[in-house]
Structures are given as structure tokens and as C-alpha cells.
Length: 380
Image (tube, rainbow, N blue to C red; front, side):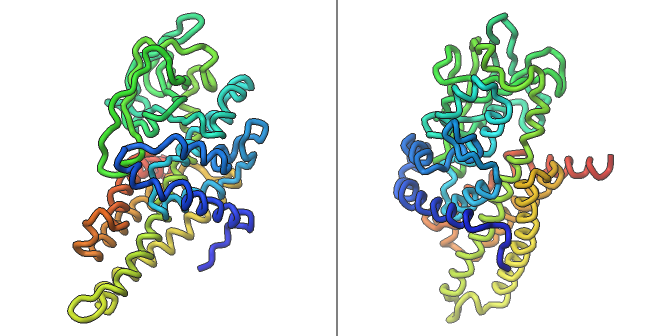
């Protein structure tokens, strides 16, 4: 079925993204995977190509266009290329809305030009060793010391944790428990007491630097408060829908791509003197995955348009995230199985897609959390 959600300008942008990937990413990606981190030059190249700050106003160097369909194109092409390490989606679609929507005019002038040029790599620090999907369990504290906040605590599983020059930290600025008393503080590279732990050794997404962050009496200037004091939880809830949509878009794109390469493989690979594609079981597997992908794509494209128009709610974003990522996980497993022993070999795309994609049902809110959000909305 022909997709109806993109216009000519989106197609032009897709070609730009593909050219960027071919020139600036794919030739270097194997080395980045070995290094466990991408090069800073890749971020600057993305900035020069206009791939950073798509929704940031033009006066700060951004694209000045908040049409989420451009972000969807970026996510789809990066997913199809199998290059999860260069986390432009995190930078643009997760951190970006906090900076553009909550920053003061002074903060915008200070942070957004570097954000758009690639000179400033960003991260957001929510997860702690004892608090993952449950943000109300956050223990990192920021004490009001007059002209600054005194920040203490630790974060873990922070994407871009090693490269990040600017980290949005979720901290408790009031002793009041639960969701109340959380605020967003921006910690910049070089702050005294701000330390990075090891680059965590993950089973997938090897070139995406993921780190532990430690804050020991870090003096955060008062002018680095982002948004409303004690309003952090509401700010987070407002922006999580877009994060989950980005993950969902990558999920269906990954499933579709895996189906494509596996369909080609079973047509070419022979067993018992004939192509695998002639075995009924294989045909049924392909048929089932193709149907599941087609149905999911229809729902996801509707969600993309709704979000681009500002009409998508948190419940449908949670549905999209849950369904698309669980589909991705199932398809990756079934496609690896159809590749047989070759599917277990690291040089085959299906193997890396299997390990890289496994995190999709976990970060941005686990599948179980997504179901809880949906269930509460229907039964409360």
C-alpha cells in the first residue's frame, strides 16, 4: 500500500538523509562499533547538513520546522541503515523540545546555536540505579544555595553520556516525595564535581555511548534551571509522547527492513534442493510478518500525522510504542531463525538488528509501563 503521509519536500529530505548516511556514517560505522563511540566530526557533519535542530527557530541556526514527519524520515532511514550509534533522534526529538519549549531567551541564545551546529551534543539524565520507569523514585537532589543549586546524586544508562556537552538532569528540588518537587537542571561539560563513569558495555548499539553520571556537590547556576521550579514531572510527561513516537517509528521501520532482507534471503538460500521460499512453513512465516507489518504501518502513519498536527495523546503514543517495538522484537527473532546459522553471525545485518533492537521495548518506558498507561486511561 502506498504511503500517503509524505509530500515532495519530505521525499527530498529523505534523499538528503540517505546521502549523508552514505558519505558521513556508513564508511566509519564499523570503526565506531569497535571504539564504542561515534566521532564528534559526525555530529558536526550532521549540523552542516541541516539534520540537527529541525524544529529549532532559524534565528538560532535550526530548521524552523516542527513537522514531525521530518523526524520520522530521519528515524526510518537511520534504522534501515542499521546505524543506531549516532543518536540524532535523542538530540532532536527528546532533548530538543525541552530546550526550545522551556528555555528563556537567554538560555536559547546560549545553547541552541551549538545544538544545531553539532558543536554541543546533548543528553537527558532521568534513570538512576534505583529508579527507572518510575520517575517518582528519583533520589538525585538539588539544594537551593542562594545563587546556585548544589546537585548530588547519580544517573545510569544515559545515552550520549560520554559525548554530551549539555545534560538535562532530573533532580529533586523539594523534600516533598512522589511526583512533586522535581525540576530540570542543565549541567554543562566541565562543571566541578560532574564526573562520568565507564562507557557501559551493552549487548547491542555498541557505538552509542551509554554512561553512568555522577554529581558530587556540583554548583549549578540558578540561570540553568529549565522550565518551572518543581515543574519537572509535568514537563517530562508533556514530552514523553514524542520520545515514544520516535521509538515506535524506528520499531516499525526495523521490522519492515528485516522482512525485506529476509524475503530476499529465503528466495536465494536453498535447502533440500530447493529455495527456502518454496517451503510452506517459510511462506507462512513471511505472510504473517508481512501482514503484521502492514497493519502496524497503517496505525503508525496515522499516529505520525496526528502528532505532526499536535493532536496525538499520550495513550495512543503508548499504544504505538508498545505495539511497534514488540513487533520489532518478534520479527527480529523470526527473521534470525529463518537465516539459520548465518543469522547468528555478526556480519549479517539480521544479527546486529537482533541485538541493537532488543532495547526498544525497554527504554522510553517499558512495554509493561505502556500497558499500564493505556489500561488506566480506559478503566479509571
